[in-house]
Image (cartoon, rainbow, N blue to C red; front, side, top):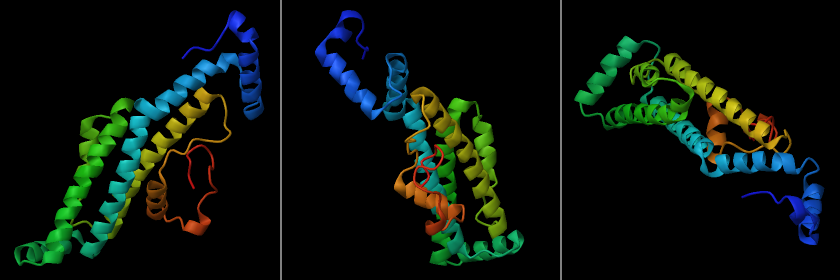
Amino acid sequence: MAFPAGFALKSPYWQKLISDVAQYDPNFDAVNYHSRYQTRKDFTSGKSADNMTALNTAIQHLGKLSGDFEKLNNGTYPSINSVENWLGNQGGNERIQSNYANVNTDSAAVAHELAKVFRQTGMSEGEIQDWQKKISPNSSPAQMNAVIHSALGLMEGRLQALGARYNQGMGTTENPLKLLTPEAQQTWNRLNGIAPQSAPAQGAKFLGFE
């Protein structure tokens, strides 16, 4: 979609349209139009849009991983957890069998989405696999918490980069794009220990955090 130029700009139609747009966005001009158009396209149907989808999905999977791990009721010592979970699996304890299997499935799902997120940034598949190997159904709560927060830290860096790219392309820091869906935002807040009433104000910074 090309911005009109030359004689076309003198027509009453385009003059009125440009005037209307300028009232809505005082920073609008013909110079930044193309950049804004390309940026918006990238964030709605391009690689950045795919990255946002993978980030939101990874956050949701990470939330499920956290919930399923909590249901195992593991203790402080991984060696003891390993014995108890093994006995539960071999002894037909359906709660342990189900949650043990879910933790393994959830970790694979998170790793898959993280690979989608970071493949464009140069992070290798090996690095993603190394992260996944740190997840064990026999981990202590502290160990699992550390692994989950390492993933959150990686994703926060990517969200910051996406937000910066959007603002640079749009030439503004106003009305930031909301990168997280309401569901992913809620999970993000929970995993980071942010109570709903104390979460950042809507549109804070450029991450779209609610």
